[in-house]
Image 1 (cartoon, rainbow, N blue to C red):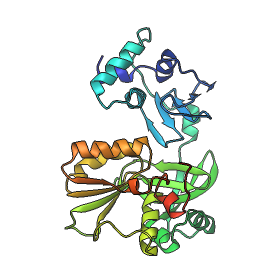
Image 2 (image 1 turned 90 degrees about the vertical axis):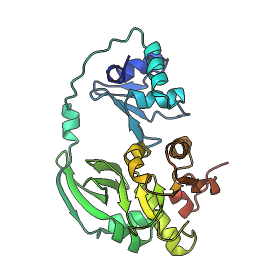
Image 3 (image 1 turned 60 degrees about the horizontal axis):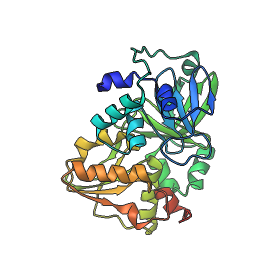
Image 4 (image 1 turned 180 degrees about the horizontal axis):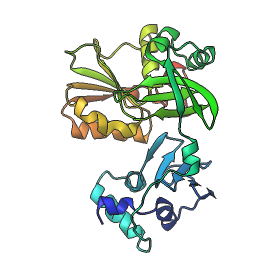
Length: 293
């Protein structure tokens, strides 16, 4: 079974075949406990219409192959394909046409307006995350939009493809296309700092400004993945550097991303967050929010 054929296997059917059953299921979606980590409250959602999944606990998403990589603990795609095939002998493989459901059409963002960050509520949200306000206003935008006929607003962070990551106290999403974000401090630098999300990026800048975290080198470029799943989009750009300083999350996904960079890149790759084992990410480090050992 090849990649294209494997992607046609229904994720819900695959999960049921390996003994993972939904805690809640509708015509459009199914909720599970994440099958590859401890998950006390179901935070793993499958979009049945598009045959993709989203893990709200890890802020990670993908197709059935991405899921197989996590379940079977291997980046060997050939092995993942074989294991999925072996697990689903009775599951039919059929062509899919992904048409947005009425529920998904209602989620489309409309009337998008982008401007300077001035909202008191959004500034308060940044302050609650410990972000220096001057940095937040300089690096972020304010986005107003409508969804299902109602007006909303959020903090926006631009990427290199013209899309935006969006955050508010009640919302986490993006305006497509989703891609990485890059801040070039100089055209001649041979080092970069790599972040998982833009809140970590803002936290790093705040820590540096406060003198609590010295920059690892002079004037590094700053790259934000906007999801660890975007690492593949950054690989060609990362090859230009001799030193890569990773500020990724202190979890399995972050450590695997660092390992992958070391395998695929000739640069010297540093896992900076290893020095802060009691903090999940850079924002927790900024807020001194330690997790239990």
